[in-house]
Length: 196
Image (tube, rainbow, N blue to C red; front, side, top):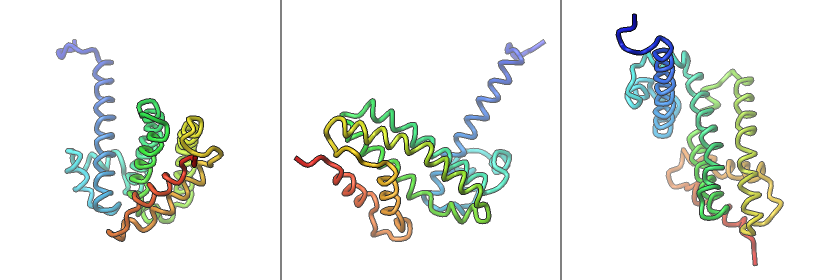
C-alpha cells in the first residue's frame, strides 16, 4: 500500500522531473559562474549558486570537462531555441536578428576556456563544434532570410560567414575590459542593412 497517495509510477516521474530541474539549475548556475570566474571556477561556487551540494554536481558531471561540455551544449540549445521565438515575437525580422546576435555574442564571450577544459579531447571538441554548427547555422540562416525577405537587409548573406565574423570580433573580449565586442558586433549588424 502506498501511504503517500501516489502510485509508484507518479513517484518515479516526480523524481525524474526533480532530477531534470536539478540538472537545469546546475547548468544555469555553472554558466553564470563561468561568465564571472571562467571554467576553472571552484565547484563549490557552482553548487552554492545552484543551491545543491557539491556531491550532486559530481553525480551529474563526474569531471570538469563533462560539466563544461554540458554547459556549452545547454547554451547552444538555448541560443538555437531563442531564434524562432524572437522572430515570432519581434517587431521586425531585423530586430529579431539583432536580439539573437546579442545572445550569440553573450554565448561566444562566455566560452573562453572551453579548449583548455577539453585539452587532449580533440574528438569531443570537434563533436561539440559540429553540434554548434548543426544547431545554430539554420537559426541564423532563418533570421537572415526573414530580414532579407522583409527588405530590411541585403539578400544573399551567408550565415556561416556572419557567425564567423561575429566570433572573430569576440576574440579577446574576456581579457580586455576596454574592448566592447557587443558594440563592434552591433556595427557589423548595422552594416547588413539594405541601402536605399
